[in-house]
Image 1 (cartoon, one colour):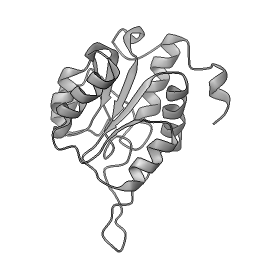
Image 2: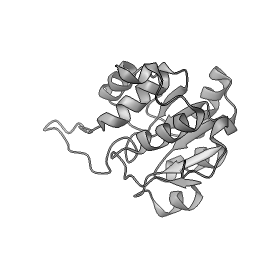
Image 3: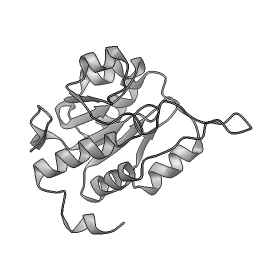
Length: 173
């Protein structure tokens, strides 16, 4: 039984911000000043499973490091919007390219740049430690903090509700 108060049978696509959602709020810096993000392995598994099962998955982030593109491309994500200064433009591009409607999309964000996207999609999700304003508009607040399984939480709930979680695709990378 899902703890999300939304008709999960409508969901066809997941979109995630990176910093504060798929990685923790604190990011170590390399000696060269480059951010070195940590990622959650269970998030990665769930994202890859969603892709293999035919769900749309996208990344919309203000970050601009090649490691992000490499990580999520390897998981099968084809729509990766980096250096996104106005995220609603990238959401609109994604919907135009894929044909998804707002009510078919979950967006997980944690801070003010995510606000307009979260107000547009069918289901807005926030990590437990998201900014106050974002938690205030989220229809679902994950029990997980950013970087600690937010993607796994929402993907698992949707796929279980749709009967796709324990399919054959789940038992391998």
